Image (cartoon, rainbow, N blue to C red; front, side):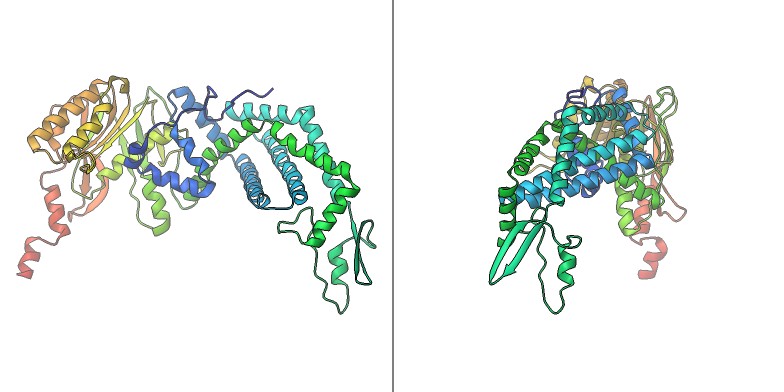
Length: 502
């Protein structure tokens, strides 16, 4: 018997209210990633990203399902399945425009047959796949139970017999003495109208569409055929009407939920395969809580998706949190890759929590109960508050005790405040989150935030020997001259360049 509300996303099988994650999604450029997934698999993908698992068990549940989806046999089966469902949706849109009720009945019976056939084939493919996740194994058992029900089996047999009778039904159309006669009967030869029409010498014979399957408006002659079919075979049309009603009884809500949720996994897998073919690395993150959080070859996924289009260079970075280290404070020259690196860390945590592979060569991300972000904001015209006040208003709800243990990404806070004030406020923010057991990264121009701060380690955006950004992030405090030298080189203001111009 089907489990009510079963989900391959949620262990407790309940629908979850959408969470308000707009700011986080904008900060980390997650919207760009989700737009890419929705472009491949439709807008239904979006709503599945509104709920982030709240437990390590649920993250592992999703990760196991995704590992099954990635397998070649299962991936190809799901592509076929979703393609068939997509085709059915297109057919339904066309069928909804059909004006003739008799033709509509024919469309409906064919769509019922195709829908049930798609699930029957999926069950067969899943049974042959090496499924390891609880979610996919349970769903297969549910699907097999549905297909094994007498009602379902009789419905499939009933639908098949109707279609067989339709295929074997022939119309005999006779034109004689300015009159057209239509009757049910056998056509000489193999019964192929198209073959007969093409064999008539010296005559232009227009082909009639099959009125029981045509996807264009039927003409008067074809309508007449349908009326004769209904008149001569009333039992057939009654059977068709009964089959239409059966569709709603085939565990439709449960299967519809699966259709939506499988797109969550499949859309990401499609994107991952495309990027791997282009040379980008992905890995299944480990979640060992006894090991430090770390990654090698980590890159910004949203930026990498743009690189697929324009061929821009993507720089990957390594990082690790050492013993007792809780927060990175990242400083360095403008346009040196600081914000991109911070985003890549946030994306790493987010994608791990959502159960996906991550854009890196290797990664370990222990369970983190939440993900908090705060990127620099502009003044609000609506509220009349200045930039500093807007930042504080957004920061306040983040600094609640229920956020203990979360991962925190902060980018360029308090830039409008005097340096002395910004240092004091920045240190208090760091002390607060470290005190809550959070880990994270703070991007800033204030290298003083690393001074005598427990659990805080300095990172710097690197320049090469010519003072040009490399977009590499390494441990250490950026030198005072780094930003200035970077600007001098950028705007061609070296002593020699100025002397030459003057």
